[in-house]
Image (cartoon, rainbow over all chains, first blue to last red; front, side, top):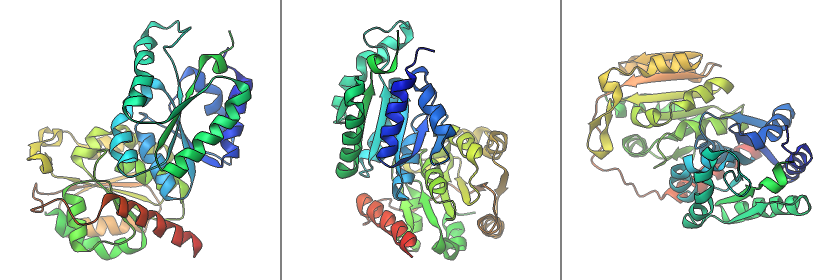
Length: 170
Length: 190
């Protein structure tokens, strides 16, 4: 599978270095290695979801419990989570670290991903969610640390967009 | 059966656990009995109270967690039953007040008024212990029993579609959230 194992490992290790101990996830092609690594790690709690919005509640519960968490999802999962983000995470000032695979952008071959790609960034901006990109191995670890730090200090959702250049090996 | 009478019957049992409720009548009625720092009221984001309880229970497996849900909220996130059943935390109790109505927005009937069976859905989702109760005595006994048990339990409590006169209380949402988290931290420091 041409999903980058090397860069998935890099992301996973960066999350662990930030003390992230719970990951909620819904399977998506680019996330397969990350989900498998989480599942195989006894130090990590993996919550496989039926729908991504559940992850907002699970991360809030983890935050109340004093456990750092992250959400792994596709951008369409972000779209499916918006009410939870607004009427839980924003309303109650809950830190959320969201790792969102940015499907439907440059290089996308699957026609069904393309509409979601168009609206991902405009929606993040409309919601006032700070976001950045994970597109290069050199900067990925630092960006993850910075995003996690900002989510915790600002008590709000922060998004990292997982880009094709980092996740996919053609 | 009135929801507030059910809440009264278990109020003393709620002292030593973490309580997550949905919005509206449940939150207002529980607060009318007396707010405690271990109560968190999710005053929006319908459907996510059970997910919040699951997150708490997975991170604090020794802690008793009780979610007080409702038919309207649960119907918005039925997948949560399958996620809870998948991980089945031993100390999570899920109470669903089913008044067959979206009461706080004017009493519109939910699908449970037309035959949708939340007990059946919970059981078929894989929740290990499921019950439906229709009297306060039975409610108290079933919830108390579940709270002293060691298996994920969903209890459907059929109640009348009657609620309090007002839903807004003087407890700010953010104050409640910070107090709840501090309470949990104080438990960990003990």
